[in-house]
Length: 394
Image (cartoon, rainbow, N blue to C red):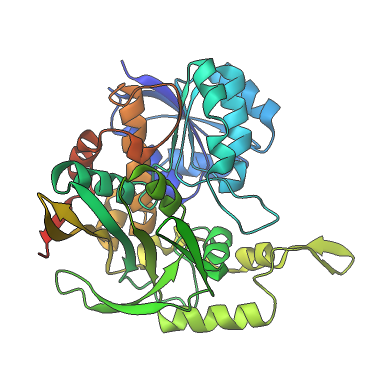
């Protein structure tokens, strides 16, 4: 009999992860899906191959989350809600002695700053409580970190440079839309870029550093832009001998043009403004106007290509290596009624949960995904829908 899991959040990633969990009753025996809007949970539940429970939950309210955990009695809480809610849900897990998992690190609502310090500070308390937290079990962060540690274990003595490259060669046909939560997406893209080099962080203006990247398997060439992403912080901590780590993401000129206009007129601001006697946050208002990422599933065609280029040494010889996954939007929709952006995050969330519930990954405290043995996770990627390939460039 599988174990009990409480999944918080009812967006695209949650839909994929819940669907994948529901397909494995031997691991995930009972599932409860909870969100601020219960009707969204019910809509997901209607799609699934077996019944699950649903509940209304304000995950910002620790007492409310504690009460639901005590009522349902899960073995694991999967936080697939917004990154703003990470700490509140971790507090609820501490109060109830339940393991925790998320896909993105904490960031405060009032400033576009995301780093692991807030969650790393929970390590001793989780360890003393005899529970664990798995941070960043998505694709990036998540799979890209596991790919790096897999390469270090099998193909390198030392990795010196890491370039994570996230490309979406798909097209949804909309004038402007984001492939995941618009509020989080736009906060990330409009923030200053940062990369790690020789023990220090180097900051760049937003999207000011760009290169051309030739995708594998004849997917074409795309413009990629240097950004900051949280896995750089944890990889810099856990990869010995590392000299540089960078993160790149592709954007179309159409996306960048719309984003520039929205910035210029103040629609991407995250501070409050007064409108008709009410306080509103422009970015949250913009989110309400843009297409729901979940609605893009039936419209999106093409592929994503996310991977890691690594340079280092093996037996004293320099080596360059590329490991990647290609995911097809239409195939994902045919399987779980979702596009590939949600799929590539939801599947690793399920696999991370499987690693914890099966005790394949064990230990008490707060852990990043790259601190565990990468091999079983990499095997499950091939098994559950995200097959990967590797190329030795030299």
